[in-house]
Length: 356
Image 1 (spheres, rainbow, N blue to C red):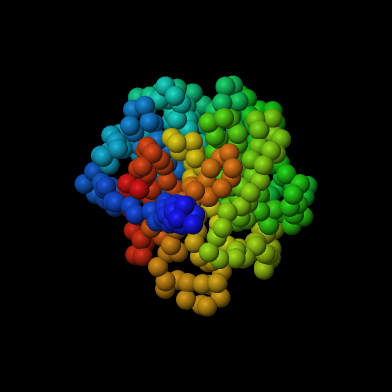
Image 2 (image 1 turned 45 degrees about the horizontal axis):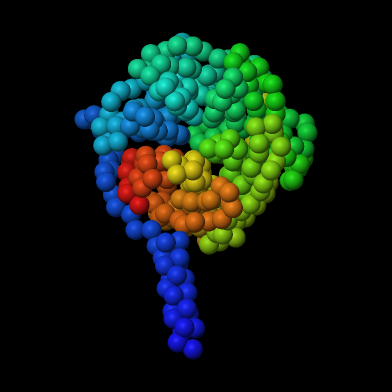
């Protein structure tokens, strides 16, 4: 009897510890700022990537048409690019990729091209995709895995396809030709605007070369191998029931411009594979549509957000990290530090680094 009692006590302790480590995620602010370099500031940041080898943080400062580079202490190190249409010049850069040797690739979304820079930030090469937009990208061997809508690139969704399903990922060669498309037939959609919304995903790749595609407006994460075969799918627990995308208005004017309006809840804003090999998902913790129906959504602070940490083998939620509402994008510095850009209650943008 005494042995059984001891076993029960040990099990109870393990359960308590499991709950603590899963949900209790105290974090500590290491640094945070809105203005930097005297009077400069972020505008519509779209992506954050980390050069772990050189301890540098790269931010696609989309609204300012440039790439900002900070060190891990939050000090500005350099600015790459400027507004324009020439080599090394941007119009709404939206996605970044850091090569192992420190070289940089930038998805120049509005100019419809990809820039390559050396590790010092000097322009090297342009790649012009022939038939698709590129908003975020991953270079792997001689292939470029791309998605067409991401972060602050959401101004020109691609819904030109007449098919009920459209590519989630387009694979390009080094000349910008599409060599492969990855799509699903799980939730086909005939309405083009809703199809663009429902097929909008984040893009990240695990250490064992699997593509993880969390959907923006659906609580689904799909997993593909590099040949485009779907090998997994899962969701994770949310504190609310999301409202699926629904068309509520469509009109056209005398010039033939079609305007559409839809309701939907955002689920996942950004995704990264961390240095620990886990999948990190920037997640909304409340329904925007429920707020909107109450009529007071504009007067309330941004929806609280969190980062869900997922095991890439079991697809199980390990824990969640609470962060500020209004978060746009994030990057993992190491196994216990991350940085994210967020908009506060007054509409001011901050860059914040926390230890968790």
